[in-house]
Every structure is written in C-alpha cells, then in structure tokens.
Image 1 (spheres, rainbow, N blue to C red):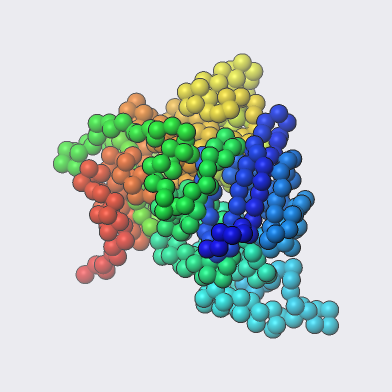
Image 2 (cartoon, rainbow, N blue to C red):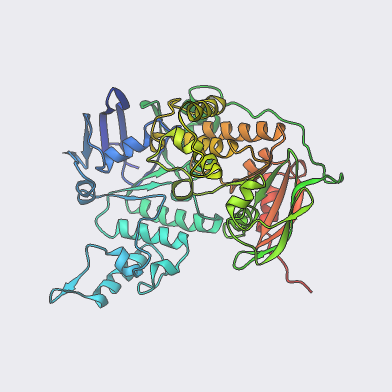
Length: 505
C-alpha cells in the first residue's frame, strides 16, 4: 500500500441540512489497493460522506481530490465518469434483463445503430471472467440468487475504468459461502489497485477485510486507524463515545427437561418451497431464537406463524386451541404480530411521520370508521417514543429521516401498540449499528420479562444465543432441533446450523 499519495482525499467536508450539520469538517482519505471501512453509529454521518464522495450530495464546504485532481461532483454521473462506482445493499439492477445487458447497461456495443448482442455478451463474459466468475452472460439476471446478482452488480461497477468502489452493506443477505466468494472478488480488485470502501455492521467482516478504518460520530471525525492496531472493543468505544452497555443476564424461563404450557405451538407446518413439517413450541415470556443458513426456511417459518403465508399442511394452536391463521389480520386478532426482515418495503413508510407509523397497525385493526384522532394519537405516539427512546423524539418527524436503529424501534412501537402476546421478529437488528443492536436486544429481553413471547430470527449466531432462552435450529425447511441456549456456544451452534440433514431411512 503506497502511503505517499492518497487516491482519494477529502478535506474539511461539511454538509448542512438547515442548521443541522450532518458532516462537520471531516477529513477522509483512501489509498490505491486498500480496503477501507467507514464506521460509526446510525446517524454518525457515514451515508452523508458516501453521498458526497459519489456525487449524490454536494459539499457545502471542503474539497475532494481524486487521483491528484480537485473535483466538484454535482451528480452521481460525475463521480462515475471520474472512476467512482457504488454497489448498494439493495441490488439496483433489472432482473428481467440478461446478465450481459445488466453489466453493460447504457454502454452497449452497437453495430449499424443497433445493439450488437454477440459483442455485448462477449464483453460481459470477459468482465465476468476477469473477476473469476462463471456466470452465463445470456442468462436472465432474475434467475440467479441474490448473491450472484450482487456479484453481477460488482461486475457492472468494474466494467468501466473504476478507481474507487463503494460497497454498501454487501453481505447483509448472503450466507457464509456467498460471503467467501464476494471476499475473493474484493481481494482480486484490491490486487488491481482499486480502492474499496467497505461499509458493514459485521465487525468480524470489517476486521477480516479492512486495511484501515475511519470512525465518525455525530457528523465529526473521531479518527483514522490501521485495522491491525485497533482492538474491537476500542473500535466500539470510539463509535459510541462511551463504554459498551452489556445486556443484563435474565433468568431463563424455559428448561428443556421441564414441560411448559405453550402460548403458541405449531405441528407439521408445511409450505412448498421452503418449509417441510416444522414443529414449534413457544412459552409465555420466552424468547425463542431461530438460527439457520440463508435459505434454510427461517423467514418462511416466521411468515407461516403469523398468517402472512398460508400453510399447505399443519396446525397452529394458541393456548391449546387450534386456530386458522390465514391472514395477518386474523393473526393480529389472536395477538400474534410480525416484523419483516425488510424494513424498507414491508415495514417503515418513509413519507409518514413517526406518529403515523406508530398508530398505523392499530388504526388498521380498528377500521376506517374508528379514527384515532388528535390528542389520543399524539399521546399514544409520545408514550411509545419515550418508552423505547426513539430519537428524534418528535412525533411529526418523517420516518425516512431516522437512523436504521430508530426505524426499528418505530416498528416495535407499532406492533407493541397492539398489545400482542406473541411477537415474531425477523432480522430485527440487520443493518443497524452496535449501540442500536444492544438497545434492541435489551428491549426484547425486557418485553419477555413482562410476559411477551418472542420469536427472534437472526443470521448472527452470537446474537441468537445472547437473546434466546432456547434456539430452534432450522435446516432445509425443517426445525431440526430445539436446544437450551445455555448448552450451546457459537461454534457448536454453527456446527448444528451447517450440518446437512440425512435422508430418512
């Protein structure tokens, strides 16, 4: 790594929204052939700095130098033309087009004024081959899993003369093998001299891939550090500006040897594809962690338990009474509510206020003709904002302006306003920072202490063990086994999660 001259150097970056400074005189630099991580809590200024680097936001003050030349980006196309490409967490390609069409979209080779399909596929094949990817350029993008689509997005980003590649939470929806393949591609790009900005909330991945870390807090620069010289606990302290809060241990409510009366139980839940005869028991005040690889059936189980999807076979009992949960509305009437893993499309409505988001489900339950108005709506929203520590504490603030952690709290408030008995949370801490994760995990524990039964699904095995009383291991569409969390550690749980199911004799 050549430290004599940065490839990217931002000095005194300041971005204001009214009187609020999202970035306050921040310095940032990247070197050729390095992986650089940008760290900080939600709301620290990471997204604003990335938008300034990629031309989505103009700097109010400060300078940006790329490859020795001062640049003034006024739109993303300016940054792209200068050699800065971005791959977002949500793949923004066209799944109805071919891989080749996506890789060269807007830059298709032409002959006699028409797109030369043969040349386009040949060029796409070369780009994919350069990254060590064996993907058919003629295949439809939507026919591939998300991990392959993510790699195609990187191929598109690097098909031009890329100098800087920004990867925004690229591993959030990938399993271990897919992450390994992505990291191989990143290392190849690094060897070519590409500067890679790697944004992730997974600390283990940051420490595996990054050469250098820049920490932001409250829009200001905390510091730049070599990854090898910064302990993880020190990184977290710098991000939070305080000691890391620990989750107080709570008494486990379920012991495997002691029979308990289930608030919710399921037997033989089946829906193809994805779920084959799953059995679940959930006691009052229990947190049941659910662990499994991507595609194992975790989300399918959550959707079946909450009426989002209808089972093809199996039964669900509430308090030992068989019930038909054939819609989310029916599930809510029985006290079973669901928080999707996809906050953006199945959760927060960004254009509505915090207050309107909180009362949304309760209003839907009461119906159009029983409007929650005026003081009642304000009192309800304010009480949940205070109880969950939602920031900003302004009921009228648009939900889209909140950090990921605070958006998750708004979703919890919406569901808790229904006074549920069972809360099913699918990846509630995905994409939120360390401090917000701790707060959400604490809230789950406190809710269980108050008698709420929780199904907690997470790809992070340490989190499942930390939060859950028991852990249901999901493999190949089955709940393979359910064990007490105290009997497991991350290594033993990983072995169970990754163990292939043997065919029945």
